[in-house]
Image (cartoon, rainbow, N blue to C red; front, side, top):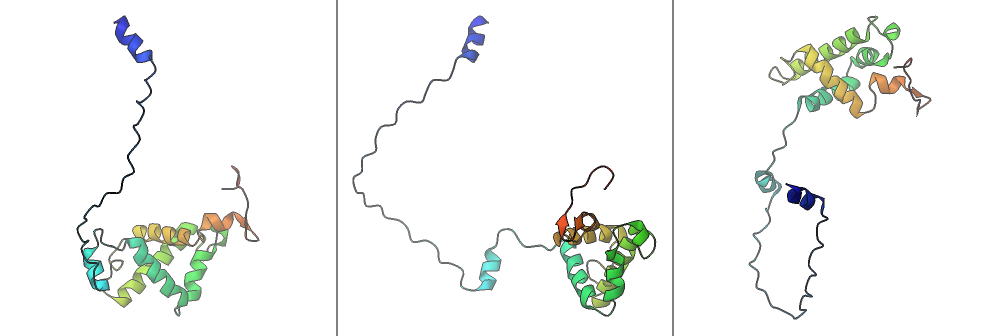
Length: 158
């Protein structure tokens, strides 16, 4: 038993020296590589990992439409507040739900089979949070900025 413990404590020996490689010229025949795809469609077919849009991507698309649409002012009003007292409905969570409802309604107007058309509001609220963070316009980030500069928060400033 003492022998096995003493072996564990030994330092590993250094690797043996590597012999120098001869630098003579060798001719190696390589097979021709396969041709590259000819068209963008062929490239897409060759793609190993297919690009699948997430619910967050769909929410971002509708978010961008709502920012430019006829209901843009109402939609932005639901996103503006950073404290409950500033919220249109008196609660940030209710404003988030109302904004999510606008997203779902707009998705339904565009296409009854849109991925967001039958999605739960709670799920769309979460996706909207991701979208707003992508732009650094989520409520927490905006609450922690003063004149465009981030102000470090403490326990009293969450």
